[in-house]
Image (cartoon, rainbow over all chains, first blue to last red; front, side):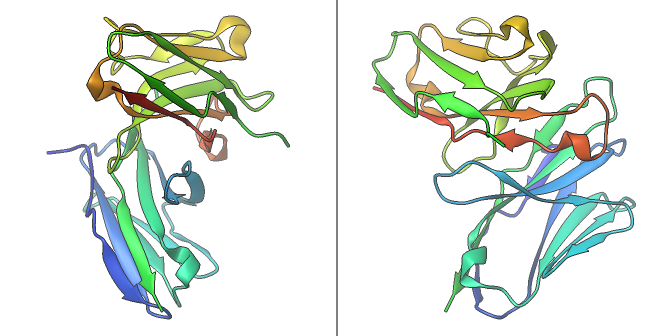
Length: 111
Length: 117
């Protein structure tokens, strides 16, 4: 089992719809979680951190489920510009704070 | 604020040749990361520096890859000799971090796209 797993997609979603995808992790001791966005042929950029209590930033909501060991990202009222690959990052609690990246979920918003 | 700088942006070499990449992190960022991203995959951490010390290089193929961060600022990543499977984008990132929380945010450079023929 991979340490961090994501459905590669692509998720084809009509503009204005709501879409959600998950990222599962295997290390129960993981402490920090993030969602990054990567546009085609560009570098990843931080979308949002994921806090234990969940957090919301405009149309984006991130949640953490420690019991089931996954984080989720919900995008409401999707825009064409949301088309990208969404990568989750999990950081362990060991002294090296090892970073593990998922392979990403590709999202395509269609007009 | 200036971002992470990388050069070159593109490099084409033949297998068994050597190549070097350069990264200049955001000023004041203690941690520097080198990643390899193969098309269709997420970034794979090659090496992580905290100032000029290596924190994690467990996934660095040390028989051919080497990296250094002199004076805790700029860093170079070298491949010698290159193989076909080294074709990828090499991303450099930096973060303030020395503890958890928001300082974990990584800022990426534009990457170097390496093609090995």
